[in-house]
Image (cartoon, rainbow, N blue to C red):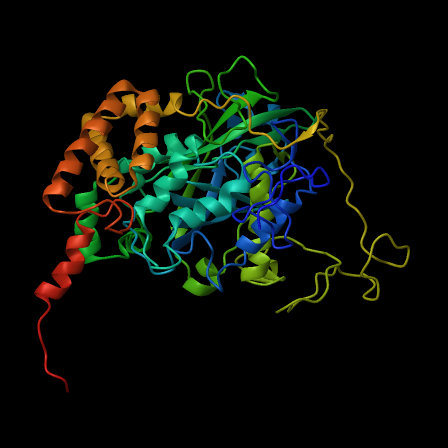
Length: 540
């Protein structure tokens, strides 16, 4: 029922189409989590966000909500002991990066994002790139993607984004109109759309793709001094991407090609290797930049913030059992060791709650006792019970009756902190606002201009084929973003859509008539071909 906006006893105006929480509370801001100032950090009392994200984390049983389709391998990380030409200890006291040549065991899981456990590995989609370091100080998870930026800059929008990208809840078919409906109305996504719809949206395999931490983190040294840091994995095998035509040909022969490629390469001793680079920036808002360093939709320019090599990773052992290792592997952005820290990146802070919450739901409260997730060092906690608990996290000599702290009766005690804690000053009003330096198209234009001719051609063709079936209002918004990014980009997209509209008119097709996975060419024809080319058979 529509409310009377003149009723001054009401704080919010609610109509029949007003978004609410499950508690019936009208949602007045579904775009931003609540933070100290518009840059963050986030606060724990973000009830609307926590209700939204924790329900999202539990939408499917038992496969992952996102990153369901994956492959993994074991290996090691070898540190250089330096960040570029300087001792790494200048920036971080994390033991994993000290002492040149030191090796740390790792497990890596690669994945697609949107589709289910047995979806093809040729889909147009970002790829997950998650590394679990079993360090001497406990586990560190570096959870990222192959692309260095993301679609959104605020965790509040993550469930909406994935809902728009996943198959339609009615037809169970992915629909580009839903994808572009969200992206056209979320202009911060345009740079990521430019990358995903280019050949970079279909990596040739897992071995030949980059990795990135995506979010901004911090490094802290022994004196409690901190810097902002970005992580980048560069494959020593080179980088290879696919066109739509090439991906379709591969998918027609093998929809597990990337998993098979990784497994067979390791089996034959052709161990894939990546070099880890970091970009470092002084902690702070950096008003001299035209972007906020905490904005995960932005790249840090390499000429201003050079890539510093810090180590290399080699994968040299396949899993012995896919389920126990790859499927039960559980990562979380909050899994950091001493010397590594969070930034106020709003996507990072939202992910830090969501990832571990998802794992407790998906694998169980004791998911960290599963061998693939367990630290390769002593563990001693006061945690009790929970599904599938099979070990006591007790220390030798600990009084088994004491499962709390503090105690003078033989319980566990706090560790002594040696390195000085980093304690930045946080001041600002609690607000629900976007980061204020939010130019959404400049870097997309720079990325477009950096593409080779064939990459530009593929990008425009892919965008035109999918946008052509979208509502004209969505097309106009996407053209406007492209024009703002680069005049050539915009004009080519406009002209391509005009030509495609004429083709569709001649074929008597209307926008909205076709549904297909992102980037799939002639998907509608495939449905017809199955009927026309199918061979008749008698019942048996």
